[in-house]
Image (cartoon, rainbow, N blue to C red):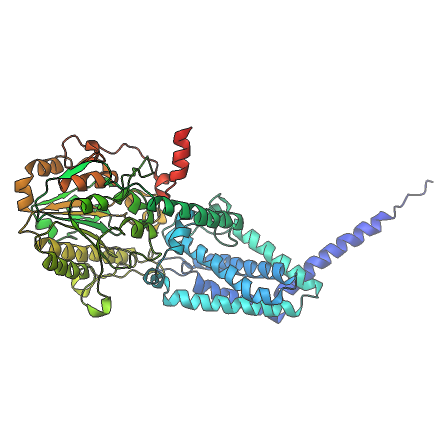
Length: 580
């Protein structure tokens, strides 16, 4: 009888399997049994409720809320413990206390921007963050955001402290790996993003747009920072070095007392004006004015102020993104207009720096009075400054360049403008209270109506033009998006209208007829430079008749456009492509 052969590796394989299962059991025990790990999981549940405002929304089922809690727990624990391992295994204890909270809080902020407002990391978003001002930043500093940040920061420090105490134990490392694996599984099985977003969370994280939670794509972030620092510096230099539009031959036959007002609006979308058929009367005063011509089919040069300003003040165009000449202000100065800039902010601040560059040639620069001096006024503060200037400069030719906060988030307005109620822009969760958010937005347009009407009432006894155009619109829940910075029609279809005085109509009837004849055409920010100069009776080689809405031969903006080009200004790429 043959003797069965034995191998020495069979017991070894059996022993190896035993070790694997033992390690798994030890990892599970280490992940859930020790008191410190139970505290971590409990703290993560609390953090999930506070940090994620979409866990317990009105009208949301209990099952969906519970799944949201589980998903948020995995996100929080996974990120905190993984980052803790990466830093602490290198024994950078003090670096961990300083860097780890900053990294995780930054990631959490990007995640919340995606979940709350539908915003993902991009060059436009990075530039907007870098150039923001104190008032804009305060809009996001809600009680919920502050509480969530403090709780998350505290949780991070506790995680570092508890993890560091037992890093020498193998079971702790196994527990961290186990928890991170649970995070990955929950990520793939996670629920659709709640509230108004229809995109499942797992699709968001597995798509090429996944640049938010749990870890920022640091390569992309580094690339965007370099691009912002390098390209934007060159772009700003380019704006400063543009040849003046006053250099070519030009002449002006405007009356000596002509007043031209260019009001660069903020975040007012065309479809929320009754002048364009909106079902609400958000402009009770201007809607009764007979001399208002609105252009309901306008397209903006950009989807954020810093980009749109370039197309509004220069001869840059939607397709030809590079301007050929400086701001139209130079031509007004050349022909004896007293140019006055009125802004809520200091035009030389970092905020929307391109706007400051393009309006720096205004000979007089005014700032609206602070809110605490005029508590019952918001946008009407601009009219106070303009009234003072009209009295000071009398019957001289005058150009006013106006820019104020307008309908910028979080849609501020005085109590007297509260026409639609209940109204409140809840920055913690604007999509969950969309009706209130839209009411607040419409009330801000009511305030704009009062401000513009007050200013044009001071211009009715002289030749005058009031050209209003918003820099862009805003998203109000469309496709789960909120506010500006999105390539959606509601964002790149801004409000645009022109008011003219009776004296102007009597002197230039042909221009008025052309404005009315062109009102239903597809126009854009391309037309502003050429139309504004023509309305001021300035004739120049830089004015193109086909982009002059005060001329019968004005042409429409070429459609369809590629909305993606509106997200950034890339004159260097355009110039390179044109040379090939």
